[in-house]
Image 1 (tube, rainbow, N blue to C red):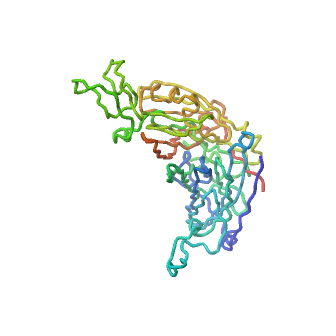
Image 2: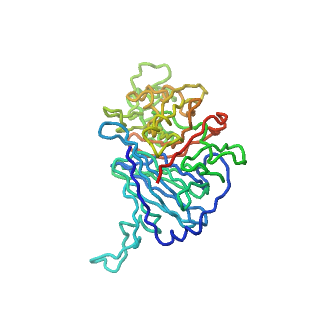
Image 3: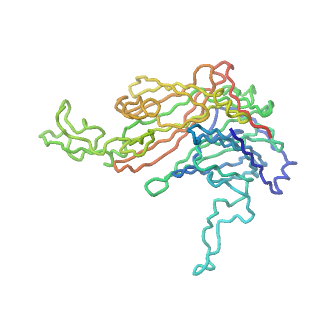
Length: 445
């Protein structure tokens, strides 16, 4: 893997911070999405022709804060193999300062940042929005753009002025992903996953140990241990969202033969399968559910269209990462996770997969990539709308973190996307009796 380094161009106020230092706060809790933390993880960052990401990071303290950030590009190279390319850079934030950038363009230091410019011609003397308005405000340093086609993650670690990691717990972040569809941008947002540090964070230098249990206020480790398991509550794959169905924007019955029964289905009634358009036990009614749930795939199994269906996409990242030697760490830090799947009747199903450095997938792509209706997560297989999926690492292996995305579509294949943080339960260090310690290894300077 190639490592690309960017040196931040610091303005005068950053030099002043050398004498100020950064105060360290003491707080212990499970991995968080709502509080200031010392490590921020953005599991899902995209910059493709159809999607782009805006990163927002804020300093929650009244002191200058310095952070070292790492992009990991998991996009395939020309030979179809993940690149695992790491690019690192630094940011400085003054007290209570938020900052943001678009990953495709990055953010460069400009002394004339402004959200307005004077118009020309007939608009002379009037103010117009500046195309560089996204760069307005105090520059945090030089943030590089990601390469075209980037799919991967971003992680930022709070450090002192000498680049030593510390447990200040001053960073909070959000990511907004814009996806182009049907001629308009669809936006979805999630909170960065924060890993809190303790007073002894960074005592082992660039090898950060995630070994602080969540059930005690005593300082045992450096950073909060990763969650022991992730829990996702979602709709079954290829089910129709009830809101879409009730609005008459999902599948509708056709070819129904009128009967005297007032309870019999009628043409135009909402449906998800053909059987919804027939009377019970009538196997030869001939009616069909037009515009019902369907997923179109290309030859490689990529989703090209969704009709009247809901799909759940997961993005997972191992907690342990080695930015010093990324290629060798892929196999070392890979985590095999078990999926425990429960329908509304508490019937259990299971599946497993391996997460190397970064993995993004629709649930059906795990076990039935070319036949979504045959997936364990499919509506017709589970027999229920609601599903709970628990993600549990194998014994003796490290933890994972991630984010979930939901795609909803109507009968016209118009899609809406949302992102949500995944519920986290327990911590990996405690559940393994301290035998498993996730590590984040920063590259040398």
